[in-house]
Image (cartoon, rainbow, N blue to C red; front, side, top):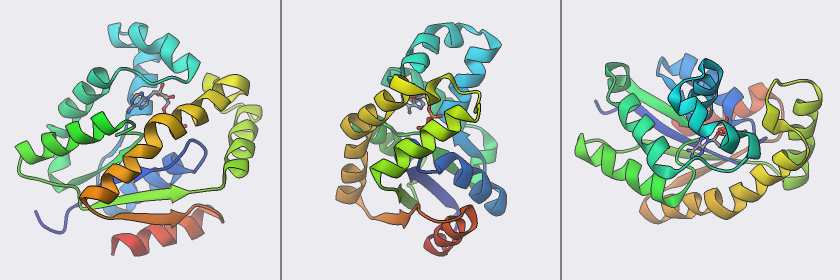
Length: 191
Ligand code: ADP
């Protein structure tokens, strides 16, 4: 199994994580696991989980750790993750990161890469607002909710980068430039 890419993609809302994640996963032939996508599909499907998390997503706050850790535990147990995986939007708290470390350890694995896409704060705000204005279809892309997502990021998710720096190496990716430019930087970091 060495050589498999088991990747966590970190970065604030608006850094372009989702866009880059889809491309990396396609290119490497590994599943793209986005907790945001999983939760939004649950809301759209009106499942029990969806009903439980809808108001949290609408506010831009975080869903409880045990809920997302449970989702990730189930997802990583699927056979398509044996050849590697890309996590997008998880872990988002230090407790989620610790749970992921433990979960992987249980199956004799560890992450191969942690990448952190960085973009200046003023650019993030512009990007999220214009995404909302263009009708991204995401209720959380506008106004106060977008601002709250950034606040939540700095308070609860930025410490995840420090956690990974303590236990390993975080590769910083400059998130400014075209989609292709950023993708090329990620490709280099993974080779
Ligand atoms: P973005 O990529 O713009 O940061 P996501 O699509 O990853 O947003 O997530 C959207 C929303 O889903 C978050 O604002 C949060 O409410 C919820 N969410 C997603 N992943 C997690 C997670 N790992 N822990 C808690 N909540 C999450």
